[in-house]
Image (tube, rainbow, N blue to C red):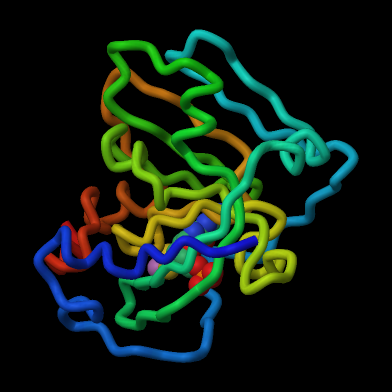
Length: 198
Ligand SMILES: Nc1nc2c(c(=O)[nH]1)N[C@H]1C(S)=C(S)[C@@H](COP(=O)(O)O)O[C@H]1N2
Ligand SMILES: [Mo]
């Protein structure tokens, strides 16, 4: 699959490719609030719910049948490291939103994950081509510790906005805060504005 390069998105935020206060690493550190949760491909289910015309539920096989794309993206962790040129393959948020039919009064989105993690974003921060539900990294299955089987990637935000082990997306008519947003991380998380903590 040919990759779409979205590593120029920093231009939209009037910033350098390396956001302020970040240092580049070629490693891919693991940051999780706890252990990597188990998952069973036979029983795993990914749901799209909330203020949508059609609730959706996908088995693992169904999810893999959805149209996918590959993008080259940068990854910015709030703890200060950035990793350039990550190749992620997955389903776009835009495609899933289109399938579900987002109702007019939706303003916000909550992602939930197998380890109990949650994270939130305004709808307009999700309706962007680079927000992916990714299941491959650099041509292989997404490593379990990095969120396999499925994670969200948000290269326009610090990486805590991308839920690893994601298994649910809920469309909301009021903003709500997720796991780290309730514990002092920035709700907005723009790396070029150093929105780290609130
Ligand atoms: N489900 C889940 N997603 C998560 C986390 C987590 O603990 N659980 N940690 C977040 C944080 S704080 C960061 S920095 C990134 C780290 O992703 P990585 O471990 O692949 O580097 O995942 C985010 N997504
Ligand atoms: Mo993080």
